[in-house]
Length: 107
Length: 114
Image (cartoon, rainbow over all chains, first blue to last red; front, side, top):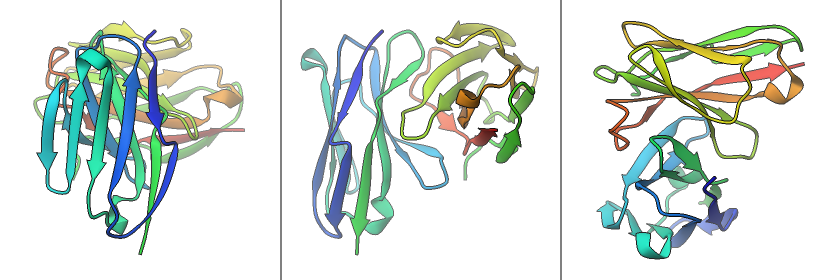
């Protein structure tokens, strides 16, 4: 099956710093999504981004489908950004997730 | 506030027992998927239901089964529980199998098998 790799696995930032999370996938996909999992376990959809660039406030994402990677940018990080960020790809109407990047933003 | 509710939030079962997890559906969402998330891992696809029929399954044994009801709510049943079944079980609903951009996840049920 398709492989999804995320890097880095862990990231510690001070409040106000910027960061870039990366997602590589091993085959062509129908779409790609970024999720944030809060401490209570809920997955929140951040971006649906099969290709191109999207921005939502301090977060933006870019997917280069031809090169099989996606990037999630977090600017001016806040403590509330802490949690696990997952990339998930869809090929056959199901999602395959990476192992996630655990982000800790300290005050 | 999520439109998907899962119950119970936590439970503890003994190896060999059976368990049923429940999931309501976001209004207008007729497709439900279940995922298993082991500690430190990403969610893994178990199966998907559309119009009360299973229309996709991941690499899970038959002791994992499900149901979808006419109101689009769903159940996940696991028989003959094993220690490795300990995980967070997530339910997700989407408007249709072809709308992969509208996922709404519940907060999950944390199952511990002892």
